[in-house]
Amino acid sequence: MGVMRKFFGVLALVLIGLVGTGPAALAVRPVDVVVEDRAGVLDRNTLLPAVQSIDFYQPTKVAVYTYNGTASANLNEEVLRFARAEHPEWISADGQKWADGLFIFALDPVGRHVGTYLGEDRKVSPEQRDDIQNASKELLRDAQWTDGTIAGIRRGAELINQPWYRSAAFLITAWATAAAAVAGAGTWLMVTWRTRLSSRKELARGDASYANVSMDLQVTELNAGTIPEASRYGSTVLEKHRSFMAKYNTATGLSNQAHAFSAKELSRRPNLALVRSYADAAAELDALDDVIADTNALLNRGSSWAPAWDRQLAPFRNDLAAVEQMLSKRHAQGDSATAAALRSFREQSHRELERWTSELADGTTTPETALDRLRDARTQLSELLKNHADTVISGFAKSEKEASLMRKEMESAQAGSKARYGRSYEPSILGTVYPSYYFFSVPTFNSGFNTGVSSVSSARGGSRTTGYGSSGGSFSGSGSSSSF
Image (cartoon, rainbow, N blue to C red):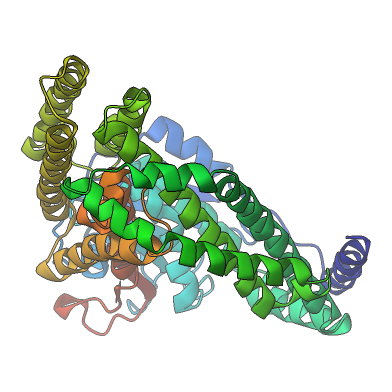
C-alpha cells in the first residue's frame, strides 16, 4: 500500500504542475435571465435565484423556454418559431444565427424533449451540447422540471467558453502524460494488488464452505440414507447426492492446489480463476448438504421439520416482502391493475402460508403436498410478475422498438439467472428440484426492469435532433435537442 500511495502522490504532483500553468478563470453571473414558461411547469421562485447565482466564464444572457409539444415534434423548429414571433432579439441581425452572448435552454415536458441553443460566441461542440442536455435528463425523467432545468444550465455554464486548461481533452491528456511519467509500474501494482486481494477473499469463502461440508460429511450420508426414494422431491435430491462425493473429491483437489499458491502466485489472474472455482465448488456442496438434511427432516417429519419447512418458505417470503418496494419505484406502474393483482396475491399468500404450516403441524397435509402448494404459488407469482412486466413496458416504452428492447432485457434477466446460478443454486428443495430460472423472482424482475429502463433511456439520449425543420429556412444557429 505504501508503494500505491507514492504512485498516486507522484501522479497528483504531475497533474498539479500541468493544470497550474493555466491562467485564472473569471466567474461571471448571467447578465440577464429570461423565463418563458409556456408549459407552466417551472417554479420561478426556485429557478430564478438558482440561475442568477450560477457562474459563467463570460457575460451570458440565459433564456429558458418551455412548451407542451408532442413526441414527434421538432423542438429546434419550435424554439426558432417562438424566438421569431416573441423574442427577435434572440436572433442575430442577419437572421441566420442566434444572438451573441445568448444561451437558450428549452424544454418540452409532454413530448419529452430538451434542447440547447447558443450564440456564435458561446457555442460549444455537438458532444458538449449532448453533455449539457444529459446533465438534466435524470431529473427530467422524474418530472423534476425546475431542478432539471437548473442542472442543465449549470452544466452549460461549466462548458460555455471553458478555458482550454479545464477542458476534458486537456485533462485527459494531462492524465495520460502523468500516467506515462510513472509508466506502467503503477498499473501493474494495482492489478496485482487487486488480484491478490480477490484471491484471498475467494480462498476464505471456499475454506468456510469446505469446512462446513467436511465437518458434516458423515451426517450428510446418514441423512441421504433415509430420504424416501418414492417421493418425487426425495428422488431428485438423491440424484444430486449420488454425485456428492465425486464433487467433494474435486473440491478437495482444488483446495490443495489453491493452498499451495504463494502470496506472489495469488496475484496472478489464472490462479485467481482456480481459487474461485474452488470457492464455487465448496459453496455448491455446502448448499447441497443443507438441502439433503432439510429433505430428510421434512419428508420424514423428523424433529427438525419445522425449521426445515421455514427454510423452504424463505425465498417465497422474501419475494412477497419485496413486492411493495418494487411497485414503489419510479416508472413501476404501482397504481395499475397488475400491481393490484400482485398486492392481492401477496396478502392471500401470507394467509396461505400460515394455513399450510398449521396443516403440516397437525398432520392434515403431507410434506409432499405442502411442497406442491409452494411450487404452485411461486409459479403463480412468476405469472403475475410477467403480467406486470408487460404493464411496465407499455407504460414506459414510446414505440414498439423500445418495448422490444425492454422485453428483451426482462427475458435476459430471467434467462441470465441460469448463468448466475449455474454454480450456486437456491439452497432449498424446490431450488434443487427446479432450476433457479424456473421461477420469476422479484430480484430478477428488478434487475430486468432497471436494465430495460436504462437501455431505453440511453437510446433516447443518443437520439440527437439538429436542424430547424421546413420552416427554419437558411437559419443555421448552433443548437440541437434530444429526447429524455
